[in-house]
Length: 230
Image (cartoon, rainbow, N blue to C red; front, top):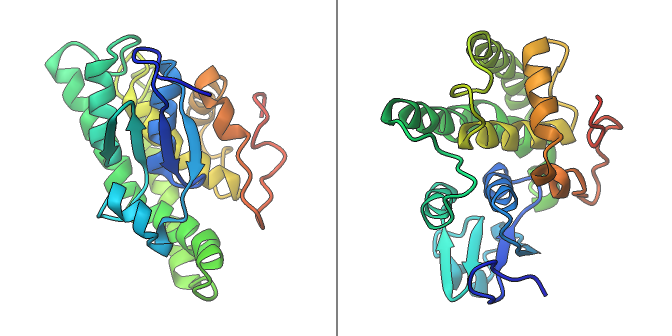
């Protein structure tokens, strides 16, 4: 049985393997060495028990001891305050702002323009049984990701990590989305050497191991997906 490092009570993360919001929380938990039992939740089926945990009907939902929490952003903020070591947020206000801005960039703009169009069409239409992919959405997502990779490359020209010189929640948010897309071979890692190097660094962290072991029935990841020397 896996337990909270502090309370000793059972912890559960209700998630879906190719949900970037679930992955962001999984990375934060793993980096802070908070052990959880992973329970895959097909949230679109609107199971009554799951809706009691989160009436919004979305993953992730974290049961930490006797507390149940929803919303990936709120969960990550809670984890940072309750388990401040190791820190995923910088101390100074200016860089904390930059971390929050980049997290929002990926969870809002990148998700709307890229993840929802590529993962949404290529994966979720199939697992939800809602028809064939919309080719217009797929093309739009494939075009938009180029802009975002170029933006990341620009950021990394003057920084070691996306929000500054220390790894932060901003990097986990970005890596959560890109790792989902990499599972279906939708990231052109040859477009930017700096982005590829950044991903190789974060991919090699112990916190990433469970993500690289994910398997989604009906979808086989490319050979490089779990390769740390890709």
